[in-house]
Image (cartoon, rainbow, N blue to C red; front, side, top):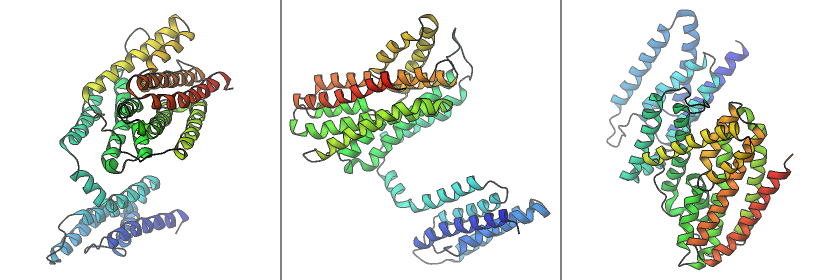
Length: 411
């Protein structure tokens, strides 16, 4: 037996034990810590036999296993027996993973096996999450499905316009990316809503919308100045998370330039984390929950973002062509006032397509981030109280100066 075959057997046993351990702990009547490893080994041996005798061996073993599982299920007569099919499906899946391992796809098989164990273990949290979902939450998920699975596939994947940068499919794919990130933050909010103290509120706010979080907390402190310290921490946390969010988005849409665009933005993120740490240890008052965020999967909001992204990517390409690179900084400053995502994604696509230098790309994103800080400061000045404005003036000034230092001094 070769080392590769031994490795396959070891992985199959490991995945079988992992899922079997979970089922044993869950007191499954059908299969547990011994049965699942045996099923995984059955899949592996069937896969090896199929290499010599043909695919009918796999089909015959699969049908036999299904018959055995069904027979065992019918023989269990306990009055409190759980009639769900979770264990049965998991057993068939582990068999399929065992067979798949023999084809040489080790990484994917390990991922699927581990994901199976995690899904089985998360039964209560997932069921609890669904029980607490309202009609608004279901609507958000269905709208995201429409955005990602209905609209995106039917859009033409070709460029239009004089500068060849307007691609409907590519534009809407950026919409799907941003809505997905925001929806994950929204889902986390629904799970931790009652437990969302200042730290968690700031993190979730940065995932959903740091600008909306700033506005919400500023309004809340108008008549409650005693919460200004906690509000300043939440707002700064949201702004910090938004920086790593746009950095990751830039890396996703422009992977070839990651080594050049990520370090300066990550440096700003680290500095902002240090400021958040100082704020955290000087905080006072009680932690409070995050204000209710808007539905991130609103179709109209997605259309507006898609339009904004298209306008900015066209404006950047046109300005560079007509006025030169210097004009791009003004566009980044204006667009970043209210939305950093659009300029980040449009810049990333131009960098990836070699329409823009990587250095210019991260500089534009950094300018947009700094412009967004100015907008947030203005929102606090109008909507918040004087104490919050005073605290954020110091914090944002420190952040702004750090950003300018990176912008002008980065090698």
